[in-house]
Amino acid sequence: MRTPFIVGNWKMNLTLSEVEDFLSTVKGRLPDPHDVECAIAASSIYMDALTKFCKKEKNLKTAAQNCFYKDSGAYTGEVSPMALADMGVKYVMLGHSERRKYFDESNKMINKKVKAVIKNNMTPIICCDETMAKRKTADEMNWVVNPVIEALKGISPEDAKHVVIGYEPSWAIGTGRTASAAEIQEACFLIRETLIDLYGQDIANEIRIVYGGSVNSRNVAEIMKQDDVDGVLPGKSSLKAEEFIKIVNYQNN
Image (cartoon, rainbow, N blue to C red; front, top):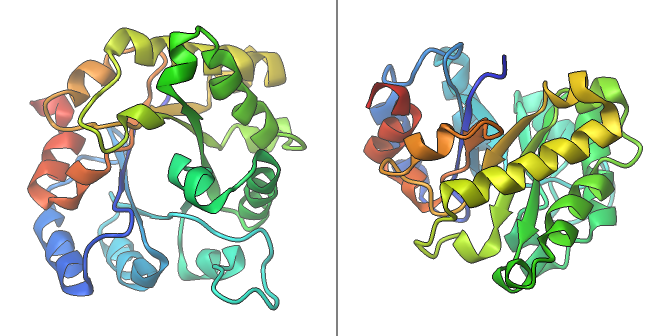
């Protein structure tokens, strides 16, 4: 049984005082981690505040939004996966469509980062994109499946069991347009079938697949009903503590 997983992606938002207010508001109001696992993906400058909070608030995990594929060296401005792990970070988001678009991150680079994160005993959240243009031409398989295959190259079956795959159609991110429940299930099913081809049924059934794209408290319950959807990646809606609380407690709404 895969535990539902909800990760709020703050992107490049909030100040330290706003982060502190957010954490103060959600304290004691998150679901039991056995029912729903919750995490916040924040800028690296907030990792210290988040990890300290999460040591006390056991039902919230810390996720970095990115990292480099080397542990150390002359890479000014990059974030070390070794340093993140040392701080107590549990998850690292990799290959988000915004990283691919604005920073030209390739599947090859993302694969290196996946290996670095796993080596440092953290869990990668591997995002794969899809464009509206490709869906209209019925060629979405190249966009959804290929990034998954490329990101997992050289990843052992034992390590693969612990990764998280994020399906995020770029046309739905921050636009207010959400893919229909049927479209989300179709893509997540396709990803699951790809994982079966790569690792077999048993391991594929352990890997969590989450959806991101204009998720909010009004649509989360319907999205979570889909068979191959194990969680969501709310973006803008996760910036407001009260909205995030509603999203993670979707089972009680």
